[in-house]
Structures are given as structure tokens and as C-alpha cells.
Image (cartoon, rainbow over all chains, first blue to last red; front, side):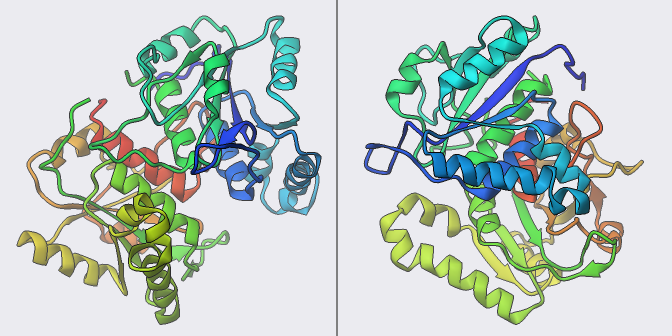
Length: 191
Length: 191
């Protein structure tokens, strides 16, 4: 399996706007294990950073506290591998703030790719997106917590990725597992 | 992507014997989110069942209580998709018990495949194992909690799967994400 050192893939975990089980737009709570699992997968697959996005100040403080514990605090001393993963986390208040940070690093904002368990007619395939990544253009793939990204966020993205799919109709992965599979499929070039 | 309806893939989440960070063999605690995440991925990728294995009676009771809440209890009424996933969970006291249950269903015990973040010289590739699954022979893939499967369990398995690998040296996925990626790679035939 070839590695892609010139690829500038970023991922974001979105806590607002997402939908609840009734399809209403809500802000979800930060979940400790989401940060660990997705940061560890990002580190494994060479993703540049995981942006944890929430407009709620107390939730950003919680996320920052978790990150500090494992990067500059006692957690990181006990477990340097966990520190290495959580050092890839950036906590921001909005997708605009995340886009600005990535634009500062690359001289241009990233192309924003939404993910969704439903299939959109214009969805981009995994192989297509993996190919587009190869020229180094920064891309930011969004993952929704709760019941997924709000439709208005998907509509405002530059592209939407095809669903992961499976062997039948069931398609209800946790955001942790979905994010890990998407990073594996995009970065390990098995398409 | 082709589905493999004739494939008899089982997965097991092992809580003993696993190793702790010092390499000592221990029994780990059952984690609620492991059951949910891995059962949802098993359901998505057409895996026959997730066996949750622990020799500790109180930990089996905890696992059974979680499963009951989501299959016959209020959780399943509120969230039928979660019920569908957790119905694939079997709680057993040992790998021998799991092998016997699978042997009852198929008339022969499964081939047992260990997983490990380290590379074994004799490791089986993802493509090889995906190919072996096609003739319907039952296979049971073991995932270790804590710091992974104990060496004696790996040595006693019929085969060991190659590590997931990544884009560099970092290879520290959560068991939830590792299990999801392995099921995706084996069942979605992208090799």
C-alpha cells in the first residue's frame, strides 16, 4: 500500500448544525471517545488535523481540556502515543474559522466535502475523491455527530461523498467507525 | 460493490486473555460503546454475529443487560435500528463456547483468525482472507480489548491477519475503529 505524503486531507467533527432523530437542527454535546477514536485514526492514516467544531463556548472548553490532558498534561506522559494523536486536534467555533486556519497553512481554503448516510445523486465516489487528493489541494471532510450533518450544511459544501454502504440496507455506523472507514478508503488507495 | 451473502464471517470481542500496557495478561472490563459500535458495523457489513467473550460472570451480566435494554427493552422501541444491530450480539464465557455455538450452526467449527497491530511473518493478507471467505467456510475474527490479544491466544489461532497499517509508523486505532475497518476491508471486496 502506497502512502500519500503530499495529500492535504483534513477532517472535521461537526457538533452544529447537525440534526436530531426528528430531523431538527441542533447543537450536540462533545463526546470524549469521539475525539480519541477519530484523532487516532487521523494519525494512523496521515490526516493533517481533526477540527472539532462547536459554537458553544463551554463545549469548546471541554474539548480543549480533554486535549490538554493528553498533550501537555499527565495523560500524555503516561501514554505518548495518545498524545501524538490528540496533538492533531484543533478546536474551533465554526466551519468558517476552520476554513480560515487551513487557508493560512496552504494559501487557499480547502474544498469542503460533506458525508451522509444517504445517497445524493451528485455524490462523489471514494475513488474519485482519493484521486482528487493526489495533487495536494487541501480538502476538508465533514462528519456529523448526532443524526448527521444538517441539510443546509451539506447543500453549502463543495461536494458530498457517497455513503459507505454495506452488504444490505443497514447503514447506521457510529461517527467514530464511519470516520475511520472513510479515512482508510481515501488514504490507503485501494480503489 | 458486490455483496457476499454466502459468507459466514463472525467476529469476537475478547476481554480475556488480553494484555495490559505492561504486556501482562489480564481480563478487561466490558465497554458499552464497544458493543454498540462493533455491532452496528457487523450489521452494516453482513457479519453473522458479534460474540462478546469474558470469563467474568458479572461482566457477562453487564453485557447481557445492555443487549436486553436495546433488544427487548425500552431502547429498542425508541431506536429499532439499534435493536437490529444489538440482536447480533452473543455473550459467552470463552472462545470454546463461541466455537461450539458456531459449530452448531454450521456443522463445523470456524477457522479462528487473530488480529494484531504487530506484523507476524506468517500473517494472512486482507485479500487472501476475503478470498477464503467466499466458499462459505465459517471464520471467526478475534479483536482484543485493552492493549490487544494475549500472545498465547494469537499462537493458538488458525491464522493471524496482517495489521491494518497506515501511512506511517503510527498504528494505534481503537478496537472499535479497527474492527470496523477490518469488516469493511473483508466484506466490501475492494482488494
